[in-house]
Image (cartoon, rainbow, N blue to C red; front, top):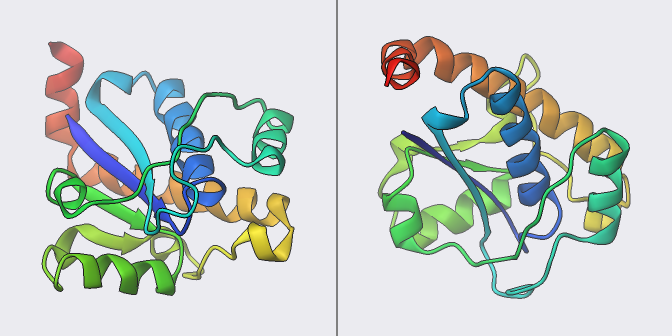
Length: 161
């Protein structure tokens, strides 16, 4: 089982969007049994809240649905994840601060896997949920391809059992 944890600041916009988008991509490939997919926030500002209505509306417009409750990232979450995918440089610094700089080999910016590495701008501030959706979808698709290449044997084993 490959554990993927998406991370943003409050865990109500970008990271739950990434969680639900990635779950759909994985499901479409018939690989749900090979992945554990979650999301967290670096802050506790939104702890216990659901996905932000504009983020949810954007996902639904693209045929993606799901439930979500915001939770703050812990060091244990990082330790127990194979991949921690942050949305921007600020999230990256927060996660590295949380871990004391450890576990850097599993912490990446989501869009670092794309042909145009970039931060996913926070739609809470930009109000551009479509742009966030587009960037997150690009990052998730490229990340999935990388994982499928790097961990093909493990995924093939999961599919057989």
